[in-house]
Amino acid sequence: MYRRHVRRSNGRALAAGVLGVVAGAAVLFAARNMMRGHRRIIEPEDAPRRTWRRKGRWREGIFAGRTITVNRPREEVYARWRDFAIFPNFMENVRSVTPLDQTRSRWVVEGPAGSTVEFETKIVEDRPNELIAWESDENAQVRNSGRVSFRDAPGGRGTEIEAVIAYDPSGGAVGRMTAKLFQRGPGVQTRRELRRFKQLMETGEIATAASRPAASHG
Amino acid sequence: MRALTWHGKHDVRVETVPDPQIVNPRDAIIKVTSTAICGSDLHLYDGVIPTMRPGDILGHEFMGEVVDVGRGNTRLKRGDRVVVPFVIACGNCFFCRRQQFAACDNSNPAYKADISQMLYGHHMCGFFGYSHLTGGYAGGQAEYVRVPFSDVGPIVIDDGMEDDRVLFLSDILPTGWMAAENCEIEEGDTVAVWGCGPVGLFAIQSALIMGAAQVIAIDHYPHRLELARKLGAKTVNYRNTRVYEALMEMTGGIGPDAVIDAVGLESHGFAPDNLYDYAKQSLRLETDRSHVLREALYACRKGGRVSVPGVYGGFVDKFPVGAFMQKGLTMRTGQTHVQKYLSGLLEMIRDNRINTTFLISHRMPLEKGPDAYRKFAFEQNETTKVVLKPGMEARNG
Ligand SMILES: NC(=O)c1ccc[n+]([C@@H]2O[C@H](COP(=O)([O-])OP(=O)(O)OC[C@H]3O[C@@H](n4cnc5c(N)ncnc54)[C@H](O)[C@@H]3O)[C@@H](O)[C@H]2O)c1
Ligand SMILES: [Zn+2]
Ligand SMILES: [Zn+2]
Image (cartoon, rainbow over all chains, first blue to last red; front, side, top):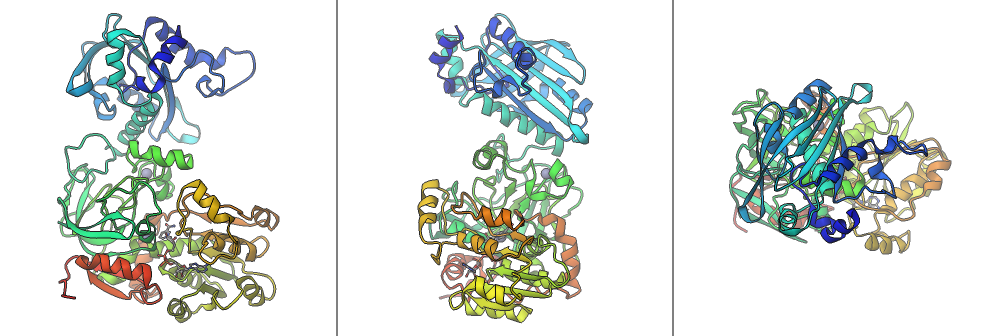
């Protein structure tokens, strides 16, 4: 099933702008396993599964995972990430994220040709200073899930953030539209978004070479 | 405003472009009073640095007056006279905290950082006016510049010292100083310096200040060698002399304790095939500038130190890893951590312990920028350093 979807979407096409977008229920489940993946294998191997040569069910295009170190205390980093409303500051295609209650948020994401796509997400796991996981609504037009974990970096170097994102490569009209939403590979996108989050946390602003205001993200 | 822009190989122009404005809270806008052309700019001029785009504003050595300050910057105020480091650094990240400013994690915009991450395994920091590899920031060969993280980089000059004395704090003076520092000079040491351009000349001066017993300067331009001699260096003209043999004879058969490559690989492009072909040519090829690194490693004494301020961008064939390993050499290199050296060097300039103006050969209006590039690129013997002055009246002819 995954294999077929991946071939159709051809990796690149699925590039996503939200820290994640679009995921079927099976994919959501798989995302969780992927994050834990390396702990369950028999042969001793400490590298995360996404870096294996033979990835098994891991496929770029469905999952993206990246780790970054932020030179700030874990509590502070977690608290900033827990505030979904700031996501548009560092996520390229996200126009707004409006919290609806403690766990639910409404996302507005830029679509092709100036259009927008909206969906809701809910936080499905929240361990303060350790982990935040969210999934999009079951009947969301654009389905996605993300798990972000926080751990102390060694030697007082701040916090390691690991983000794993799942995408739904579903076909049909919605799938095609979704594919158009995002121009880059999810791995690259995730790395850039983590970099911007790091810039924001460490320097209070997001680096840009623009010579005048109004130009958006760096 | 008027600015010097890049349009391709040996094609730079002075054009009218939009004035910069404050974008981020920690920004400042500087009105440029003096800006220099660097040997590194020649790599751009020669078209060997990738990711340049027509219209990019050049220049990374500049100083001037603060005319606007972002609301997040409490250090600078309007009217301050500042020299700006070519390295853009945030001051907050792991690297900045340990004063490795040129390794700053945060100053290269996220999407541009991918390019150098792919090339080098890790992304570079931001520089002014130096291609999109280093962020695509507009440079300082212009009337105005937007300076990000301006609460960290620029150093305030508050005692009226003239521009010419302090301008080179922006790059080549700290670069020469760090090159000498990387030699870990001990009493009695001989330091050999390849290249008597501005970087080499400041490295020579710094090595002597740090207590080198003897500095040997290597180049082929008589006038540049003459400047080195005036600083107190012994000179070797590689046109007339076999460099390795000369260095051995001038050091009692031991070889220099430390060697500095202040030339770099400037005449090479980044394309691997291009580099490979070039490197396959004779090792003695005069224009093959990776020759300097090989020669320096070959001449350096056992257990000696190799310092490389010269810029390299891609790959070098026939890197003498055998000499490097068997002689137990140490190599240190990198873009300069300019911010780290500013206050110390400013003090030395103020106390006249370091001479910063001897190498300036030309002062020209910004409008004459294209002429200045031509001179610096093709009349290197006489043109040792050009300072452009945006405020200076452009004369006819
Ligand atoms: N690391 C840094 O942060 C940093 C900063 C500034 C400049 N640089 C680099 O330092 C290098 C020198 O800069 P510059 O402004 O002095 O440049 P420059 O072009 O003015 O000087 C280079 C000198 O090297 C000489 N040379 C060429 N081939 C030689 C050889 N085989 N043996 C001996 N000398 C030789 C040339 O004749 C010239 O005088 C450049 O590569 C520049 O990009 C590095
Ligand atoms: Zn320079
Ligand atoms: Zn930094």
